[in-house]
Image (cartoon, rainbow, N blue to C red; front, side, top):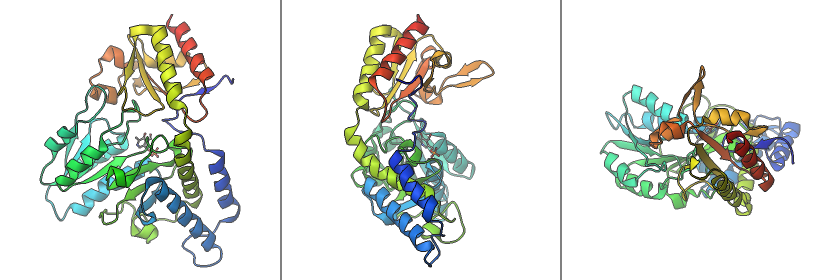
Length: 375
Ligand SMILES: Cc1ncc(COP(=O)(O)O)c(C=O)c1O
């Protein structure tokens, strides 16, 4: 066993060897501009077309419904700003519904369109971090354009009831966006069975490269582009495509579908929790939903402790806390706050997120280390 343990797969994942190999072919012999119609452009265009089919196959969509972006943040911006700018001549004050536990790339984009005149309703979550679809029903108005609720939360892993939310939103005439940055590669994300209109994809969360992602845009959904310029991505996102990264995203998408079935992380994560309970009893608390939760995510609080401090004493362990630390004072994570977690519990939170190469020995090592630190 190495002396370095990586339990931060929700922050990012290493590039899979298969992904790196696919990207190498671009670096070595696909330098052409994909928009060029000559011999040099053609292989680059073909590589992008292939990647688009790979992403579409993973999501169960048509290739033409995939727009490549610079990552999850841009996809979220495109979905929300794109819907806002596309509806302004139809509605005087467009209304948006989102949740109180979204990633900043959704929350801050909602705050931005609010500053431009949109009305935004943030639906609360329960103590497990889950949205009640009935609250979405109550939040809907005649002017509601878009409902944006993440598929699963990055900090606590809670999975949202997207199908039910879609049904309610569609009945009210709104479209639905879901940020699936954390679910892709960890569970099946099928756009048709979820019924969603817009889906965010971020390659580096599922063994692809950083700085690339995609937005699934259901055929017929009108979005204003965020980047204006030449007609790339069928006029939906201008700029010469990042062929290298897009090929990496495509390769990662193909692997993602295969890997879910072989995943052992659920067993390891449950063992992790069981060992912590045996060691710490009631002084360790699970944050997030007990069942409706990402298979790899274990967010736990050590009552009366500071998560940052515990983490800094864990030797060689990469994990994270959702809380912020400013000039020696600690602030609880906004997600735990929205869940109503009490401050002495919330400040003691650590998120362990497991991945493809995590092992039982690593889990046991971290539990042993925690036991000796807390003692
Ligand atoms: C839920 C969620 N959405 C969006 C993002 C942003 O993705 P990216 O880092 O590709 O911009 C992240 C990454 O932290 C995330 O966890």
